[in-house]
Image (tube, rainbow, N blue to C red; front, side, top):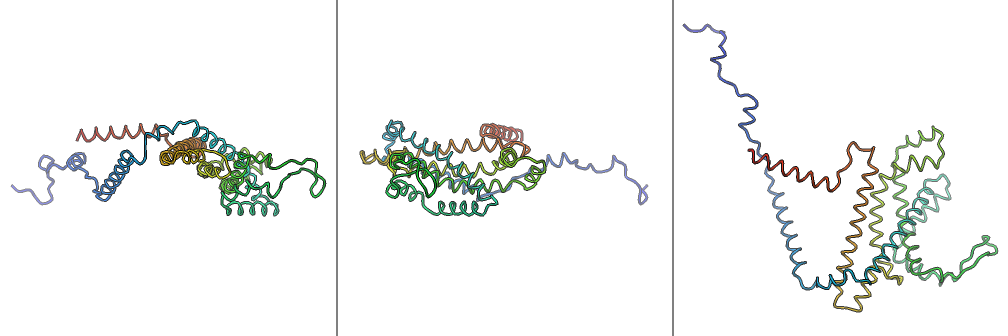
Length: 326
């Protein structure tokens, strides 16, 4: 007896339907092929391998002489001079930059004009010209005096006695650094939301307190990475103080190179490695300073290099475990 049209079919007679879990199990997701990425990766690895092989096997580099010169007292003394000049110039340059930035943001047209002119001039003149000019400053002004402007002098002293090689180097680098730091600081201050200034003024807080406790901490999040770039440039710019008779790291290497002309390349490699170490340390300090000032501005702090390494190892283990299960 046939079933009438429209009669319901029993569940026992209905064909079994695939459940979602069965469908997902039966189908395997194949990752998208990216041949260009693999070709580029292989090419870069080949170039890196060739470069490393050349460094290791080329006798022109004289790695035995590199090891001899790397910790020689003469170069270490020059390294200490580099660190001293960098530290003093960074401090004085940042202080000068803060003053110049505040002058540019001042309501006084005279302060704004003078600050703008200083920044324009020092950013336009090459640093080596500034250093050589200061080195020969005693030819223009043999004595300096303190007293009434356009009037009698109370104290006078010989400029050549004060303008030592270290003083000339620090003053020249600080003057140059202040011009760049001023724009970095000014940009950081302008990055603070205007509502923060208005709220602080509405509370009746003094201007100095507003800047120290409200504006500057927020501006440092923008100032830090930019100024650290300037600081790295300052570390490398100290190599120019050799031209004002100050034996820094580069100057000591140049002197030893003139005495031992066959070791010029190893000496340059020593200088290169020491500058890489110094800039790397500055970059590490930059990371942790930025991470410190990121608190309260981001939901999660950026991971440290050790945390990134642990996360990468964990991801590799999880991927290997999933592939083994499949």
